[in-house]
Every structure is written in C-alpha cells, then in structure tokens.
Image 1 (tube, one colour):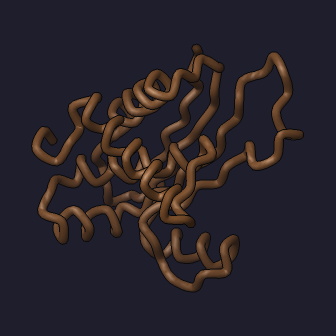
Image 2 (cartoon, rainbow, N blue to C red; image 1 turned 135 degrees about the horizontal axis):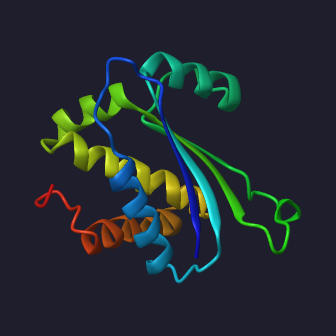
Length: 155
C-alpha cells in the first residue's frame, strides 16, 4: 500500500499542522477496512467563507459546514486498473472545527481528526443518509479513532 497524501492549509491565520495526524488516520483506516490499494487523497483546510462558497456552488446548500468530501470514485468507470485509487478531496473548515471543539468540550486536534476521518469514510463510499448507514459509518469512525488512540479522552 502506497499513500500519496496532499495536505494544503489555505487559512493564513492558522498555523497548526495536522499532516501527521491525517496520515496516521489514512493508514489506520485503510488497515481497519483491509484496503491494500495504493491511494491518492488530499486534505484542504479552509475558512467558513470558503467552505460556504463550496457548499453553495457544488451542493446548492447556502451555508457553511464543517467538512465536505468530493469523491472521485463515485463511478466505477473512473478507476484505472494498475493505477492508484484517486479517492478525492476533503475540505475542512477550521472555523467550524474550532467552534465545534469548544461546543463539545474537547480539543481542536480531536475535532480535526474526527472531521478528517468522517470525510475519508465518505471518500471510501460510506454515507449517513439512512439510519442504518449512519450507524455503520459512525461506528467505524469511533473504532478507527479509538484504535489510533485519538478518542476524546486521549487527545
């Protein structure tokens, strides 16, 4: 398994770096799900204004949000055998993450790791539109973060 991971911080006033944490989450998630394919994925940190624009322009939802994933594997025709799986992009609003960390009473690091894991699972085909799918996805998030020692109590 080879992971090509791009980490981009577009928020000038935010100097914390989560590249190592996100890389650990990618490897832990792939191991947990028994995925050995080579993959490509990117994380882009943005502010609320930028994620609002993305949400409005691409999802027709006129408000900011915490995380948006753009999966490139939505169609099986996209995958080329022998090439890395290009999973897609995860956009995380740093502003939303800060606010939610405060609201939920845990660290910003924990919130950023949770949002990245959530976005990564979306890229891997998981969703939470139906109650039974939500249970599966949210259980996976908890298991992955716990295995990586990134639970609420630990970070």
